[in-house]
Length: 290
Ligand SMILES: [Fe+2]
Image 1: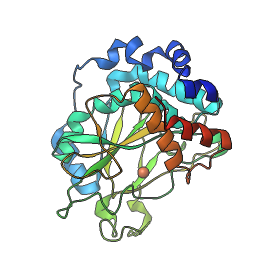
Image 2: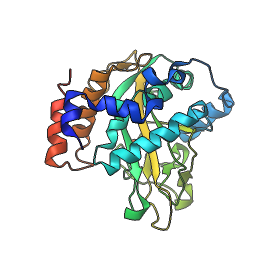
Image 3: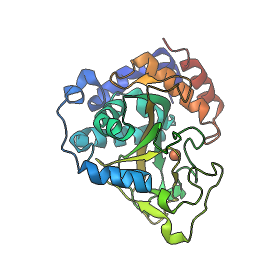
Image 4: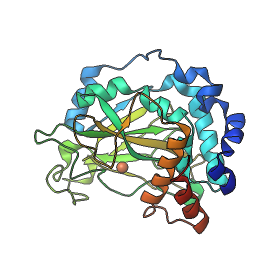
């Protein structure tokens, strides 16, 4: 990791040259507002009501070239020992999530903003890596009394995601005896067949409510390709911030804000990924990035 160039901002010159599809300045396609064809809203919302999630096949398909370059960039980050959170230093992830705004509004029934909570994953089969263990994203504060959601998580695969390379698994809420009842419960189901694998392709998007029980599975060492993905959380804007602040969803954070947010993510997820001294120092410094 070139900590010096991260802190003084010169790393952006390198990244814009090597990964031009990931920045507005070098890729006008990111800012185009052409809407994408959507799957049937009634089926999507019926699944969300019953199961607590939906899978939008080809939801961000129009960004196929950008997704390929995001996967390349994420691989570079991991090889060069940068936190995968630096994927969000580019503008492409923000634009992809923003392009799903119609689905988020449809599901939340309200305008929304981004929660400063995001991450990217490089799940390496060679290391028998896994995603995050069984959890609920925000079990105590994510539902109104009538069960409707205050907030959502959107998870996007950047490479094919399958049971053999560690795709997401969920307990659909209709089979989860502790859903909305016991926030600390990790598995309370009537038999393992209720557990559901959610394989997906690059270009797909998954959206779940933040009480849904889920995890990223462990990959098989016999699988060739790693599972790369990213996620961002969002909430209704007519309720108080669930985590410090709410970021506007219709404007990509500026370069300085993106770096400050990345510093925040690296430190807030330290319990998931213990930090070496250089990464910790760099994260603290970019919290004051200007
Ligand atoms: Fe999660």
